[in-house]
Image 1 (tube, rainbow, N blue to C red):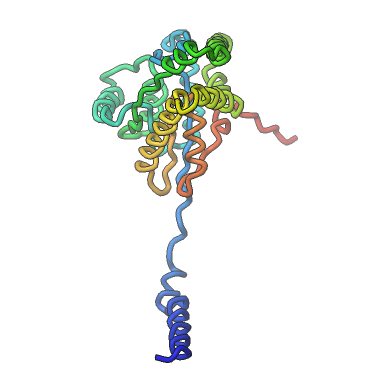
Image 2: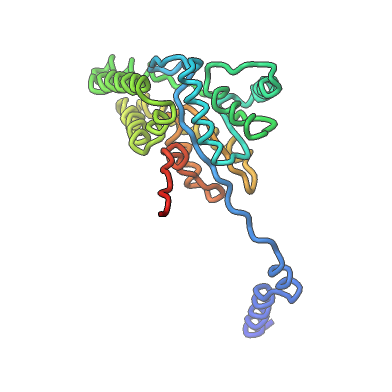
Length: 285
């Protein structure tokens, strides 16, 4: 075939592929509109029943009458999001046991424990008529103690002192809960300012090491890997049209929000939209 004939044939083929057939055009016009991207609300929280985190802080009892009223108010606020799925910080391998316990609670055969999964997740799932909650955690050790130990042994007193100051700040933050409602406290934990402070602390940790020793960066890289796998679990369980509430330790909030925000398939929802006080609409006279 001559080159001019080959060119004409290529043009005809390109036009045939790009021009829809009458039937194809009719199908395109009658196709339903694409569903909006699933919405994901990340609620970072403190561990209401305690934790095994490197820096320990203390809080009061969430089963006290005052805190139970506040948790009810929080659940009322979150119910306005109308979640279709509630995902929590529990290992995937424990999903069956987790939901067996949820079903007992929903049937009135069990009580809520002192943790955010029960107090917020179970309570809201029952209120929303859900048949289950979703475990999405991926467990991975964060040996922060090793990083602090290396820094101390190698004279990096700036980092060691910074960890101590950060721990004192976290305890002061926990102490502020004494005069705040749980909703107000969680609003603070999910603020951009808190996200930046937490992320900054990990990026300072990444610098710990020397030459080809990346003791700090290795721990931070593991943290990114863990949160990326949590995000993968979240994304795999999310379907078109879903409104997903994710209840997780606040230190995970920044990365999870970033992953959702940067995903072409999901849409992040501003947490403050549901935690901020509702303003009364002025009445017209």
